[in-house]
Length: 426
Image 1: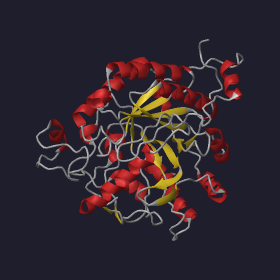
Image 2: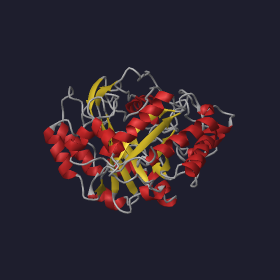
Image 3: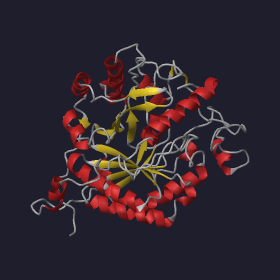
Image 4: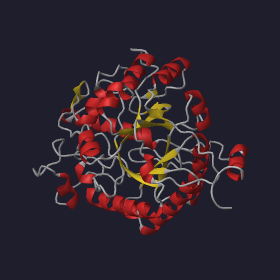
């Protein structure tokens, strides 16, 4: 990612990176997608694309021969060895069951997004998502987006969330709640507000820990190349408590020399998991040209040692060392993939994607990062504004690439098995 010498480029790329997550929309009339920085109204990334629970799902939910679902303790969600394999999936193109069949494994983690506070329709979508995961996955990574601002995260909204999480847990589906992700960027309404953010995260975490024992909390900032985006949307203003908190070297200005993560950390008691999304967007700005990832790029960015075609980013902290090791937290890569532009020419799709997945899932990464406990592939083929066209991030769409990818998945990954249980209650 471009560094300080090219702030405009890095900021534009951050918007594009954020847009990947914010552009999920339910393939139904109820889904609404807004356009621009810090926008997108996503009811649930895992609601059934036909908005109907299949007869098979209904039969499993009512089959009295199945055991009643048990609520897993949040501590048991962290694998003792290896890492959970998960997916950010475009369900308009491919339902979870089809993806699992093509991959040859049910994903252990399925990613879902929802505005927070959310509507009654969102609540219904989440329940449908839980039913699908119960059959074809294992756990939900639920990303809460407080797009009306952190002040909207009220006690009533939190209480409703906890009640719903407890219900989903009771259906045999654990949930990891990723609250207000990428808070250290500038493109979200909750961005660059560390004081308010820490308070809101802690309030949600305290309630979840007390009322939904099958749910855990994830703190997940954005990879901080190009930080601190001065003069951009939602940036903190001098003289405010937020600016003072962000000015970690106390020189009166916000730059990449300030710590881009620590001001937002809510504390060990509130955080169960830490996360950092890492994508290969190419070699140089403007993004959209195909390029094979540099050797060790994934590891170097995760540890603050990257100095390559994206820029010199060695002023960034060692995220893995600080939060996974020093704070002793399981680390998630909530989303990862490698850019392939079908219209751009250059290196072949298989070469680009193989070079990236060999880093992410390689034996070296496994040995270097024992606290890496979750890796979610971004399985989308979509238009990217930053690349001015279609980008294919997928690894299961093309049979040859899918076969190579599945063959390369190491035996230390853990997958879902479906719970094979029926929800408690009538």
